[in-house]
Every structure is written in C-alpha cells, then in structure tokens.
Image (cartoon, rainbow, N blue to C red):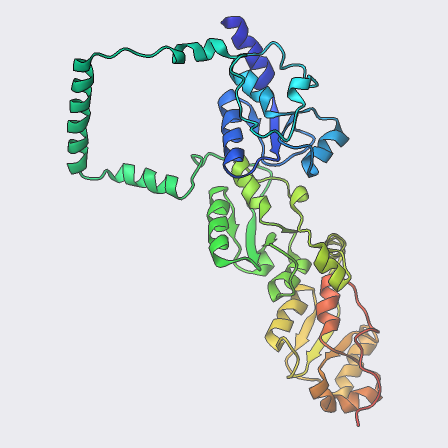
Length: 386
C-alpha cells in the first residue's frame, strides 16, 4: 500500500491540469475528480500546465497543447489513476488514453476493476426482525426531525448550495498586484450581479467611475460611453470569462487569455481592439486638443464630454470668439481647436468656415476613440453654409 501511495503522489500531486470538451455537469464532475485525486485544476490553459484532459481533440486549448508539446489524455487516464491502476498511467501516449469523443467518457471498465466491484456483487443478508427494527427506527427519527426548528446554520448552508457556491472563499492573493477595480458594460443586470459577487469574493471591487476603472468587462464591442471611455483609460477590456475562470481557480488570472474578441464588430467599424488599447497606453488621443460642441450634437454634450475628457481632451462650455480661437491655434497648433457639430447646427458655424477652423461631425470623436486615431479628413465639413 505504501508503494501505491508514493507512486500515486508522484504522478498526480505535481500535475497542473486543465480540461477541454466537457460541459455543464460533466465539467463539474471532472473537476471534482481532479480535486479528489489531488491535482491542481486551472480553469485556463497556459505553459504552466503539465497536462490537458480532453473529451474531444478540438478547441483552442487542444491547439495550444500541441503547439507547446504539453501531454493530453482522455478521462480514462484519470479514472485509472483514481481506481489505483497506476502502472500504466505514466504512458500518456498509450492507445487506452488516446481514445476521444466517446459515447460515455465516464464509463468504468468493470473487467479491469473487478477487485473493486466484487464486494458489491455479494448480496447482504438481513433478517426480517432486523429489517423491521430499522424501518421503525428510521420512521421515528423522521417524525422527530419534522418537528425540530430549522437550524440557522443549516439554512445558510442550504442557501449557499442553492446559489451555486462551490468553494470556501479561500483565495490566493498576489501581494505585488493591486486588487482590480471593475466596471461592466453591455451585460444583463442579472449576470452583472453574479459577476460582481464573484469579483468581491476574489478581493476585487466595483470601480467608482470609468476614470478609476482598471478592468472593463464586456460581452461585445459597443459604442457606449463606458466602452469608448474605457478604451482610453482602462488597462484591460476583457470578456466575462476572466471573472468566471478566476473564480474557478481561486485567484485573479492573467488577463492575456481573456482579451475581448469581437471580430464582427471589428470588421463593421474597421478597427482592431488590441491595437487601439496599445495606442491608448502610448499617449492620450486628444491631448492638447480643445473642443467646442454645438447644442444638437448626438449622443449628447454630456456624454461626448465624458468620452473626450477620458481621451485627454478639453471641452469648452461656450464658444470662444474668433480672436480667442486664433490665439489657441497660434499658441498650440493649427488643429488644436476643433468644433464638433451636426447638420442642423451648421448655420451657427457659418463664420468659422471662412477662417478654416476644424469642423467635424460626431464620428470624429466616436470612431476616432474606437480606433485611437485622429482622422482630420473623413468626418470633416467643408465649404460655406448657404
């Protein structure tokens, strides 16, 4: 028995295992099996993992396992290990452990494990008197419990289980990393509530404003004020999976594997989110630019102001005189003063066209911030107003 224990420890206790291809209850069951066996489970997959447990040979994790030459096996490998059949589990390439997409990956080979199943094949003999005593005793205990007051502790535990709580709250905290300050955008309130609970269990907190937010969690790219401001000020824009997998792993995971990916939106708006985030970290897009917004600008002056100021710009409450505009252009740059307007407000800008003041529609701001690029041509108004 001691030899078996040592072999089992060497094989499983040093393993850092991720899983792929298992969903719903099956995924929970596999995770439980790993924890019972003593392996370290991670909800993500990185070069630090030593093994990938696969149900099917597909998906991003499987692709990375092949690229990084990390061994991958089926669930039979883990089953054999738990059932004590350790003599062959070191051979990951064994045909027994390389069969995938099985009808029942949890199936136990009864022939191979007959020594464990044998005791369950022998029926227990219970005398009629013993059976009668047991039934009577069980019935009386049931009546007693029926009249007992509900235990507060029991109720709390039951409520906790009902809410899906699957761990005791013990987390690993990186002392060199500040707790994340998170905001959510484009996610249903019910889901935000659940993600917030998990965030707080992990030691993070909901940010007071977008200006203090370190992580913006979004299901997809959207042109909300929060998202557009977040491109300029947040360190990370990531998918909800970051919080979900961090919660499963009991510590805040690296954000690299959870950067928001929305290819459809990137094609629609002709931009790349990763590139935009890199540009925003290099310098503020609207640094040293002064804006005046005409009253009819959409989505509204207050919203536009938040987006502009997050990108380092300054918004004037009232339009300065032409003389003061010229001073701004002379002291800073010829494009330092920018008017953002709309078709209905163009008549109020008639005098500005004569002096070649930069006049653009709202897309100069909205598209510019999304791309983190200044485009002085595409959204510009030209000529005189009739």
